[in-house]
Length: 457
Image (tube, rainbow, N blue to C red; front, side, top):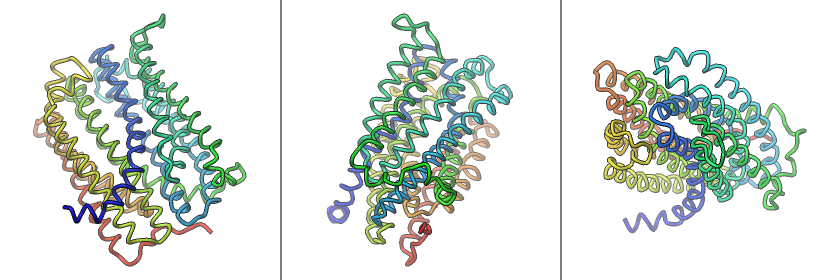
């Protein structure tokens, strides 16, 4: 173990220096929905909590499409920075900003108007659907400022500047919680809004974060040399397609994973309202640890992109392996926490004892899939840094939609194992993804030819 630590020590340090701020920043995205769930669960009741679960399940797929597309700039920035091609970074930012604004508008229209047409036909409790509709509108509108924030966040992180997005996320989440309590509870003369209150707080929070992040990037001296070619005239089809070439498969990877979990939530919703609320509690806790692992994945992608861009393939492999080590240690710790405190953690979200009993059982299952969840997301990050996005997209589709979700339905509904059976299927999907992505990384990193993405000259 000592020899292993000495071999990777410098890579651990470099990775953690990048990863810790990204982890906190990534966690911020989850904490928005987590804080919404906590506020609603305690101040608006179980029906409202089930409505939050329903909306989040429907909203997650379009959300990760947008976030995946916005992610397309990060490995390209890391690679061009590794080559010393600073001017190209500004041109990529111009195209990414335009692409993400258009994507945000399209997704808002698709989410709200599309879901409204069929939300009444999903076999959910009528009282849950009634409360879900106004929250859905506000949450879907917030995707536009969120993608603007993500544009500048991913640009900065691609250059290795990760602390600023972390700080903005921390203050943004504090604002979201304060406004959420005020609006839902009805403090300081504000009329109690119920579930709509957390919708308004999330929208305001994301608008403020987008403005602050944009000002930081555009006015900070450290980005001056990268922004010389940041202009409308540099928006072009070629770079837009290059961003889409990476961003679209990444978005589909997110869609296949999150879509499977969303589909699982709908299956659970058809089983019962209590089970759906318990699923929301357990999946919110699991989502927090996932987003932390996703931060390690983002750091792995940045380092892999730097080494890939400079042609240093030996360092790339050592850095990637170090990130696998980091996420295994971290997710082992969270698995122990879930297993030891499964009876107590659900109280963070709700005081409904029927919900807590089921959520506690689900957290034991969540403890088992922590390692698989962490290693699969790091595998995706490493491969993205090298520009390998197409095969991982196929792997995620097979893992979640051919293996995970069908087994979840069979065990949960057909064999009548209920919500536990659904979660067993999700574990199998995560395990399949983790194994196949690691084998893909091993094959590529040990090959003689690592040229995956063509450059724009």
